[in-house]
Amino acid sequence: MRLILPFKDLALDPRLLRSVQHLGFARPTEIQQEAIPAVMVGRDLIVSSQTGSGKTLAYLLPMMQRLLKSRALSKQDARALILAPTRELAKQVYAQLRLLVANTPVTAALIVGGENFNDQEKILKRQPAVVVATPGRFVDHLEHKTLFLQGLEMLILDEADRMLDLGFLPQLTVINKAASHRLRQTLLFSATLDHAEVDNLALALLKNPYRIAVGAGYQQHQDIEQQFFLADNLSHKEALLQHFLQQQDIKQLIMFTATRADAERLTGVCEAAGFTAIALSGKLAQQQRNSVMQQFATGKFQVLVTTDLASRGLDLLQVSHVINFDLPKHPEEYVHRIGRTGRAGAKGQALSLVGPKDWPSLQNIEKFLRHAVEFSVVEDLPARFSGIKTLTGKTKTERKSASPDKARRPRPAKAVNAKVKSAPFFEGGDDGSGPVRRKK
Ligand code: AMP
Image (cartoon, rainbow, N blue to C red; front, side, top):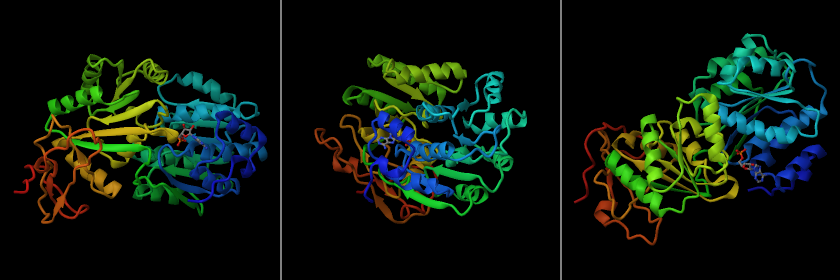
């Protein structure tokens, strides 16, 4: 790791340095140290960074520096556009930006879906210098000719991989075309760069980019303890959940489920265990979603149960635990979910339940993390399920049991060491059928 110099050595405008000081940050994070000087010399960037690494300021600070120090290309058009995959992330970015624009002449606006279009039109007519937006709603405004991008100086894509996963490529293409000129600087951030579509996007958008990879997505996040537990079925998962609710020292918890129905039911389970809990579902109108997030952020609720909606852009230092009641389909999503805890140096626990339906997702996660996960066992709640055999594999991959909680008795060896009949890790397909044979 390189020596990290203090912020004041980065030649930033004194107003920006004051804001950073106000935030209580003395030194840049590794990604900030790498990215800020590169952006300040005008390079396009492609950056892979671990969630929680400080990437937002890594682009906001040099962006602000450029806006403060150079003359605008156009008086009417937005000078910088930051795109984020979800409303929640866009709001988080906007909140950080507001702190930086305070005491400067730079104006900023937030344009996300689910909010009143006409109100947004009025805001955009005031010609903000920076717009933070989700791609869908932003393109609606472009098509409506509420604003133009010919003068855009900086295009910043936050979590580009996720934007592609969510199907925003057409919108990104429209935006790229509308802001296509030689002087534009483009920054692309992605949790992972192991994504062919991200490469293609980078080719289309960036000019001779400088690549930065700090703490690649698959690397173990030092502040997050990850545990995986095998589960037989839904009721076994629920029993494990109840055990965690009783045994773990939970300050705040975000729990991810595959379905809305489960999200609502499990909210009840958490309440029955004595927690204040709230569900965030896609069914809610934007205003209700805002209110749920707000109530969780202010600590009114200890538990937030959600489908995937909240996995990005939540930056809450109190979140001590993340539980994957169901595993996500995309492995990158796993990294993003667990990244809701262990923020900015705080410690976090990520507990994942792996039932038969989760097995293919687990295999993808293992490929992504580049290692086999180890299973932990709750003494009184061992699983009969021990994995799914593969069609092709001849090699047996031994899965070791972790011993995360030294105080608890480990599961008997036979039960703990689930033998998985699979090809060396990355090749095995699975037939989704019978259980793995245990070692005699
Ligand atoms: P991000 O990766 O941008 O979501 O940031 C993750 C967390 O790190 C946020 O809580 C930031 O406020 C915090 N953070 C950003 N930069 C620094 C820094 N230089 N020192 C300490 N914390 C930081």
